Length: 184
Image 1: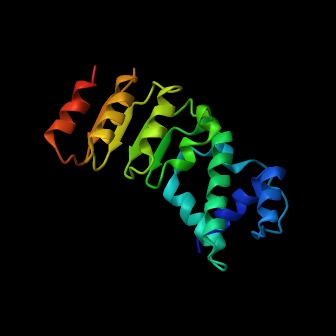
Image 2: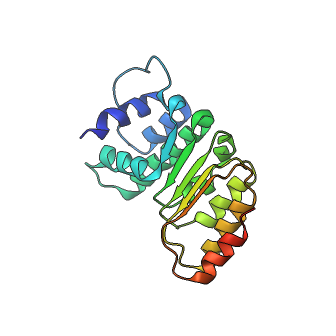
Image 3: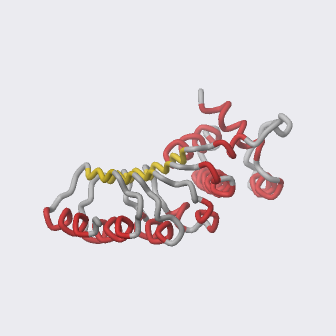
């Protein structure tokens, strides 16, 4: 229930194009007028699980999974458009929405990345290495495949400001070796 005011605020901030898209899909929208200022502009953290939970909470009556996915994609796209202040991303859901979003290049202030879900992470990590090399903290849970270790190593190699690397579980010393070799 506490997520509803947050969802309403974010929905009220959406641009007309995205509102039209939601209306075309018969997704309910709040009746209130546009807020005084753009709340998403002030976001510093992008938490994919929170965005997913907000979308589920808003769509709970119909339970339509397609509506939940659409609303989540619209929120992520809009937040990335306004991403000038986002400094922390918590990948605790699939990174697919982030990986395919063209506005990810707006994440110029990104300094911290916590990876706890490894679905679609490689494509997202490849993408962010093209526009950010100032991550100060990378935290990764459950590095249990070589592809994950290689993607993480590639991301680490391109960082010039990395101060902290946390590996919360790796299933093989070989994977740790791949990751540690990427450190400067």
